[in-house]
Amino acid sequence: MLLASVDAAAQGPSEPRLTCERGPFGTKSYGGYPWEIYGCSDNRSVAVVTARGNPGMPFYFLFAEKNGQFQLSGEGTGRPEFTRKAYDDLRRLSPQDVQALVKETLKTGPRPSQ
Image (cartoon, rainbow, N blue to C red):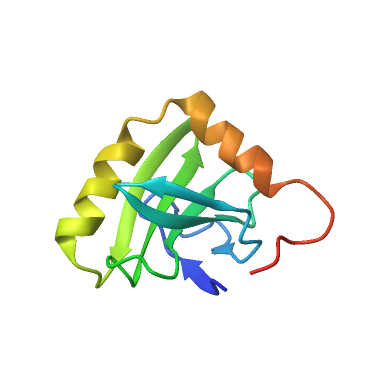
């Protein structure tokens, strides 16, 4: 479970702290390894977090929405040869792809089992 509070560079001092605790909502493959998807407190951003078995662990990426655009950032101490491949895949996602991930995290109902 991700209990991350994100102080994204996109946030200003007057903006509330962004947390990404809702999820995980499925596992996707980026860079050839599994990543879990978490929803964020603003209901517009999404965190992509190393899943069990990912040699890039611990690491997360954040798609933070600001002024209608998504800004991709990442943080962690995972091995860069694995996180870089995932970053390359993630940065190729279209805004519609990221919006679809966000939409998945807004679904109600039981969480997927782990």
